[in-house]
Image (cartoon, rainbow, N blue to C red; front, side, top):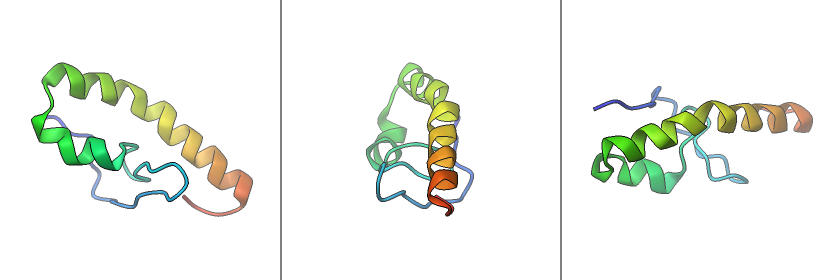
Length: 64
């Protein structure tokens, strides 16, 4: 099964997204139950999510 996990599991308190892969806690929990299409749809959004987290962290002067 394809997964975006990079073994950096740290949920950002403000966004609820994992700083490592960009998934929400709910998405992480349900990942194995999702269809391949659902997982692909989420994976397509992850680069933009991670970019937003990084921009916010830079703006705040800390790491997400």
